[in-house]
Image (cartoon, rainbow, N blue to C red; front, side, top):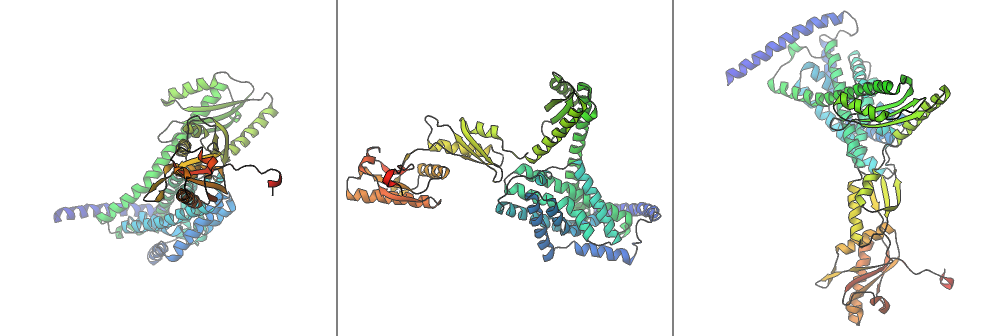
Length: 543
């Protein structure tokens, strides 16, 4: 066993020496460019120590993570670019990311592991701050700033790479932390706040998309740091690196963990870019259009799912059957039939075409702002009844539905329909308002002289909450109320229900059911009659 370890260590040492020779020769060529300062000896050691020290967990680091994420979350909720930039300015994520990049450049598994812990702690603080502020904020609708950070794009990757290179170059030049903080936060803190927003409104699509953007940008920035640190000579010389097997494994694991989302995102955005080029070419061929007449084109191709295409074209005449022919050609090229939404805007002269292109751009921008809409078709299908009214409150992400009264349906059925609709709502809170019943009789079971809360009472309280009724009368009834003893028991039932209603801030008064009311109750039944609709006040009865 000892001989195996010795042999393995020798192979790693040989690998280290070969890498050191290669990088030494490459560094000699880089030095001729004069782009980087001389970082040999004590200067390089001091820089590496500074990067290591700034990548540690401190109280100020945790505080600034929370403050930066809080500002970013508020900026995203009110769609204020200026406020989001303010969050970028104070982000402390530069330190551990720079340390992570230097760890990769030096093949230092210990530094890599430590840096990932610090970044994970900052990310957790940022996400939880975003969740908390989303819960506390009255604004729940997805703003354009939020939607823009729910999935990585090729431009996001470019921002991350350039940010990482700029931050790394400023580090080796020792130009100060402000510019670096801006470069790093541009691609990291807003997505973390968006993850918190997605979790806060229970929209896992937003949360997972923003988290993928965070991981993608983190990987791109860290690898950019590693590249610049190695090219500049700021990283520890490979000849001085102790290549221990456990640190090598830790480094490889961290590299794989960061490279995987980066590779996935690169694959997806590359696929979408190629698909968009194909669609643009086929549109121009099929409809005989110039490139400028394709006003809007958006292609989405998820890793697991059907590609979707939204296109708006402006042409002098309408082309019949263009959508079917385009789908057939795309299916032949891709081996998969996409979902296509093609809008043809007919405009004969140049002025009309220009106006149509501008209008299409405005409509697409408005659609992007309002893209966070509830799945109304799925909600209606889950309820299973025709609806006579429906309201959408985007600020609170709530859908209120008033279905028609259905024969044979009881309150529990409407409540079950609300649960099903909420499950199909994709993170939207669905509230079904059942048809109003002027009088509700709720049976109450009594065990050992104590009234028990029943599912029927739960359904009645749910319905009263949906109706928004306050200040009505709850009348108790037990065994016909033919004696004073029964009147006392009936009043106790009514007071029990009034107390249960009070737990949900519903005000009501307790009474004993009158003789007229007893005629409507099953003989010998025990429960309460809830008078939801009171008698109208007329004449002298008006206050």
